Length: 118
Image 1: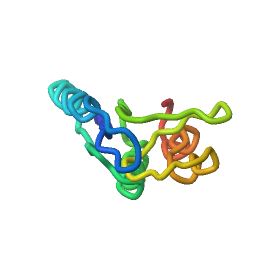
Image 2: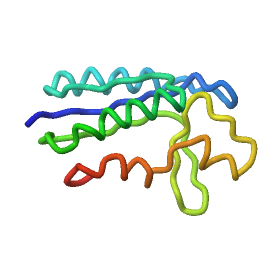
Image 3: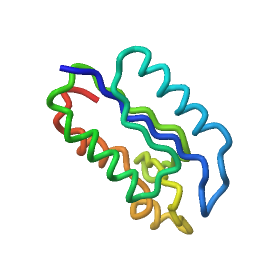
Image 4: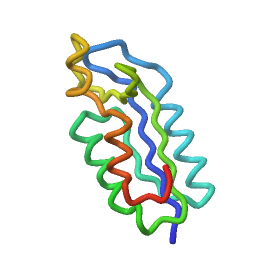
């Protein structure tokens, strides 16, 4: 068994306000987790496609992990009680776009279905 973390820092948004700190914060988190013996799956300024790839990669190894951590820094939204993580290429012009352009936390939990607890 091993310890694995998924760390994502999104700040360079194309269609909304850029964020200054998420990439720096995610780099710091990556370094700290590596010092604690974690294998880190890392991404910064990820598009929807890239973010989906990282989430899938992390979800596929859930059954063999002793410890798993998911860390995200970037824009997030809430719509109708559902939380969403926003990729850097999201084009959200109205509330109907949120579910198409972002990742709902419930969708992320489904990707991590093999994990004992998230």
